[in-house]
Image (cartoon, rainbow, N blue to C red; front, top):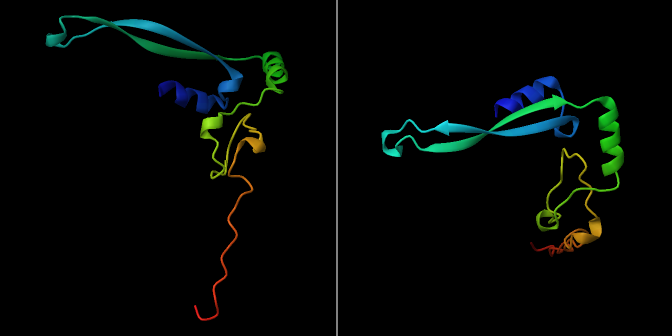
Length: 106
């Protein structure tokens, strides 16, 4: 969560940084844990150069990212980055029900 704040204020997104995740060893201070050791992840990042960003965009331009199991057709994405699902995959797109006419007595 702390890193998210930094990324926001640097005005970059995850496609414009090099993300590094490092394991950090910790020791539990709880009396019942008997000083047991565990690891947590520490995150850091550095901004990619303009050249690296351009290379990355060129490499991934032809590889749109999407997950078929989450594509239902009901959602209308407001904000997406590199999300271009093929419409024919979604069974619900274009199969809207025909509205039922009500009689004049209704």
